[in-house]
Length: 302
Image (cartoon, rainbow, N blue to C red; front, side, top):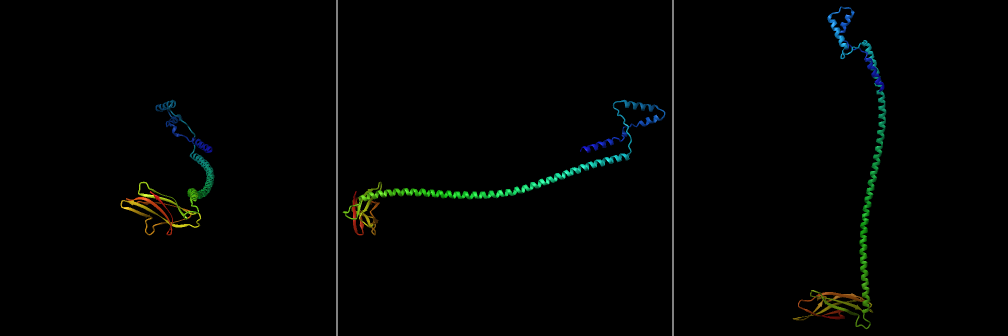
């Protein structure tokens, strides 16, 4: 850039050598003619005075006389300046072009490197996406397995609690049965009993706020018996009314007026029966039968 500025400055200096004919006043011809030897006239004297006054005034521009340069020389100088300036501009443009090409090549290399890095990053991103997808699927499977395991654990826990409750119930029932067995064994008749079957604790009581009676009893078997007792039992209820007396057999079934029972050692029997309207119960008798043979009986009075 400094070289180009110097060339332009030289060009301006050469251009300043061109004469400026516009600055030369027209009246100088008259002055020169007078200087040759022509006689002065009053008009010429007045023009001369005007020129002198104009020259002496502050606002009058000074006249510059420059050396005349032939047009061919001026053309050669301008051509040389144009060639020099063109060469300088071409040289500068070639240098700039070379720099641009180097910068373009460097930029292309940078772009290629960035594209390669972008492709590598895209491949890595795809791999990470696949890994994330597989991880999410494994997580979902693990969550489903955990939920299934929790559900199974909950079911097993409920089943364990239920079994534990049943076990506690069975233990309580077993303890009660053992206590009953101990008590019943103490109540078993001795060897001189009247028969193999005995009725213990036969009770009849009314059900509150109803016309019903509740009965309960305990049947025991002789300790020497080596087989189960297979028989039946029935209730015989004596009723009274204004019309007279009546006997009610429970169960009230003409085809099967008895309840089958099979046991060894002891058996509980209990239930509820209705009292007919207008009747009053006097007594209830419990009878234990083996076939057609009466094995035991007991009456409860009301």
